[in-house]
Length: 165
Image (cartoon, rainbow, N blue to C red; front, side, top):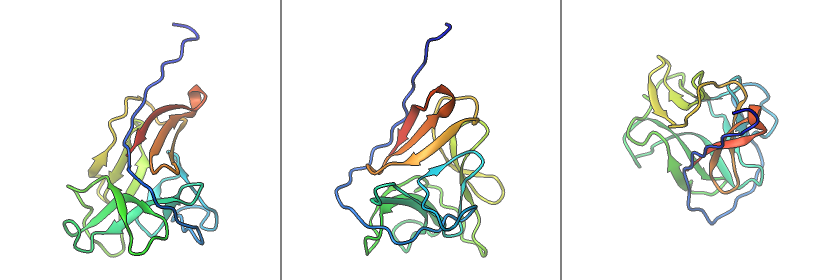
């Protein structure tokens, strides 16, 4: 139908009550001095210490080592920013960690099919969102102050396709 918008949601909720403050963020790809809370198909998060930080400086998303909490390996997750000890509130790939490697490998990205994916250096998918979209063009993933990840399609005026955790 012409002129009718279809809106879809993908939600992963995080229960969160604490706040942190921001002093530094190291993205890992393009501009290492700016604070980022989004990724696009062209600008993904690499497993090299880069993170996303929510605009209100509450949550951080990035790669972390298990430190005995889970199986050995690297994980992508969300935690309270600057809270020590680190309190992880969501883990995408709990059952499929990235292998530990030197140098670190792996990316968290919006791939050509429009899904968020965690891939190792060989392209093996360790986690994927179950969003229903066919193209990545115009997609943006944003870390919110609620701790949720919002996947939006900017081609349709930023309508949310889903939220994680």
